[in-house]
Image (cartoon, rainbow, N blue to C red):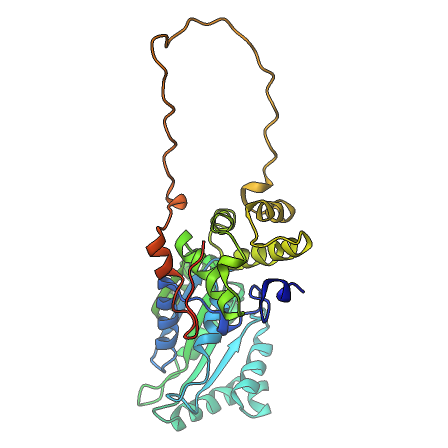
Length: 331
């Protein structure tokens, strides 16, 4: 809709988890490394925790991309974990390529899983990745724990990764899940982006879409986006996408803070949802003069950590290197 107006090949802020737009901050790189290492076939459970919208599903997609190191791997991703026990095994049997009988009989499923583990080569992996794992019924969490008990004489076992929101961590601390928690071998958490990473996140997505970030947003606008979104990547994308639509309607580029404020008010995001304070009638009272012989200078407000500015040289280094064909600096 607005692509040609801003010189873009495609929309940079779609919410679909496209690995091409994946921005790897330091913590995202660490989380991806944990996932990839956990999916190498080692025993134990890998747990990735992050607030909604921090990019967990995109990291899963990246981690599951075909790899020459694991050409014959069978990795099943379960994205809707609110299944019954029967539906759970039916789904796993189908996705792992087991027989239809394995989907209707747990003993048959276990027999075929053990056979698959025995037959797998050193380069292949048999794994289960559960997204939105905080929604798993207790019954399925227990079934997953029991599946990790199955090991071949060589020590091969089903690899499991549980990815979910902070509620998953709280559930793993429940007494009745202590045995599952003891099987957690790797654990990582994703936190929201800081202001620096928010700037790079926006610049990266615009660059992948074929644009130049400094011609599309002002730096002040993205700093405001960061404050209102609290650094949640999905919220950042929602604000930026709608700000570009507003910019097209207003025939304005680059998009400034005023349009971003309007979007935040419309979507009730951040501080913009607060009603403006009612004006207080002025009351004049007679008071003794305190300062009569000199003028008091206003004390500047202290800078908050979120308001930290990156100097020009650092800005250039922040927003370069995303594309081999072009370098850019913005804001």
